[in-house]
Image 1 (spheres, helix red, strand yellow):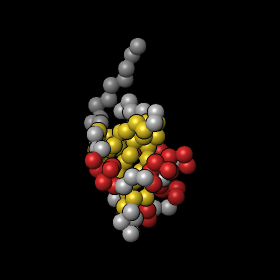
Image 2 (cartoon, one colour):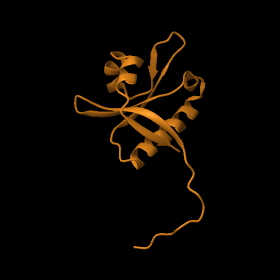
Image 3 (cartoon, helix red, strand yellow):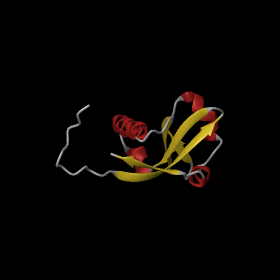
Image 4 (cartoon, one colour):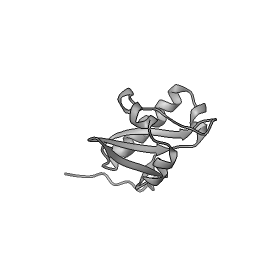
Length: 107
């Protein structure tokens, strides 16, 4: 197999601390973001989530990427499939911070 080599330097992305956890057989990648994430349009949020999911797959991480952030009343907000909501409502940002265990390069 031949590989193309490029002389261009590889762009480095932002490195994020993430909590890669498994709850009841479900892999989740909790990605703490700043509260400014809540001010993005749904389309912009989806672009970020899709990029994070792609970065996670490229890094060999299994699981659903779930962005989490503090809202205006200092409670954790998230975007996730409905079946994750009961678990995510039962934890807070302190739980996420205590479970940060990997780094993810976000491109």
